[in-house]
Length: 88
Image (cartoon, rainbow, N blue to C red; front, top):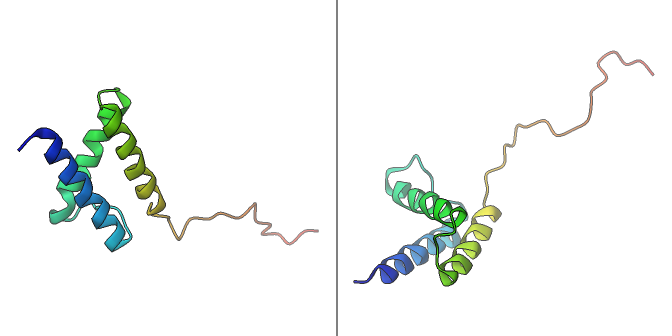
């Protein structure tokens, strides 16, 4: 098996995972750690410009898909300043 085949198989596995589960692979779950590490490793290679052009394009699609499923803190305060003194 060639390296390109392994890369392609891992890419397809992660894309399928995200489409089925509607979330990114977790770095805390044992069966998802390898996928999470693969993404992290390829992100580093992308920033160092070590990926081939074909892989760059595919990986950018994967990152866009992952961004769509990014976790949002539901308890984060997003409003403006609060007036606790009720002075108007």
